[in-house]
Length: 212
Image (cartoon, rainbow, N blue to C red; front, side):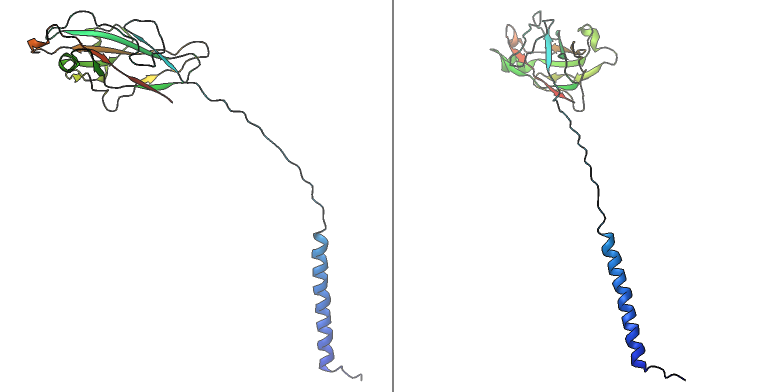
């Protein structure tokens, strides 16, 4: 009967076997890392052009023009004011050809003339949005009020009411946008002082247009 190897010899063989298996794992991993890779790339290019936003206005029936510097287009409201008398002035604003759409805000007037403080300070006004006839009829019914309301007037130095938005239509490449119209009603209130007789004043309103 052959003699069994001592326990220490079996232990040495087991260690060697594990060492061989471990070496095989390392060699297998190293072989995987030698595989080659293929690469490719793609590019994309974009060009950018800024949009155009420009406006022009017509005051009291004047030809459209870029009235960007005060006092802008001037118009005289026909007729002499007397207590309780109103006069009307149309203002049309539109975008120029190739312009994007926007909005326009009516700011309060800057008063001028010899009697700015007296006559100018006494006058009141209302404004509705319309491209139709600018007359007392424009304020009847349920118009889109920009300044004041059916029963309320404002001093000339007051701007448009809170929350009012006046859109400006976009233009086409070859034609201006459809106009946004404003009809001004300026009134000397009933009971105005006799001292205002023969006085004269002017008012310059600014419209601020913003794209978008």
